[in-house]
Image (tube, rainbow, N blue to C red; front, side):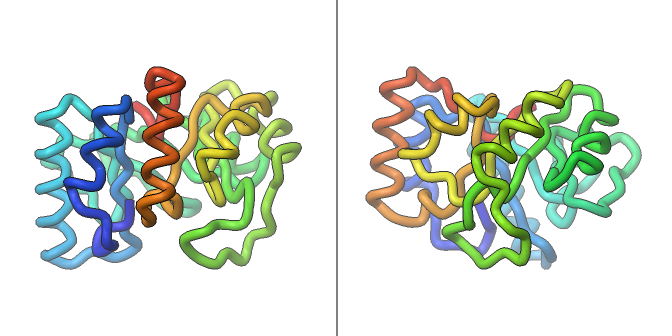
Length: 190
């Protein structure tokens, strides 16, 4: 979820109850308020046993959360890298350099939460990366509950969802999918 976005704890609660397995907190830049918000979310998630992954802007050595790296980001010493942005085969190789990390493959479809200069990879692009990967691939970009099964059929071991979380209808559809699958979806996992 984007910090500073409209999602509130009570809106995430039904997703956690339905089997959401991890949460990725992201911000491209962080001020003190964003860091406090990240710490608050991390604490709430930790209480529920839900792993939290932070973007580099929100990560600190003492946060106790995993780290997500975008292209060009360098991992600080001691950081547990949980996921790496992947848009190409070259970036997939970079993700494979971090033991235990997942490749966050994007954009699979045109994002619903923002515009992207990158062309969508489509399901065939997702499949090509997932089948060559030695790490789990998570689909990102335009992922709505109706596309989760297709992403899995094309090699994704999970998905990262943002846009669908911003509406009540999207959250309700994701809760229904999670309940139907008994929590099989894995948002960027450690």
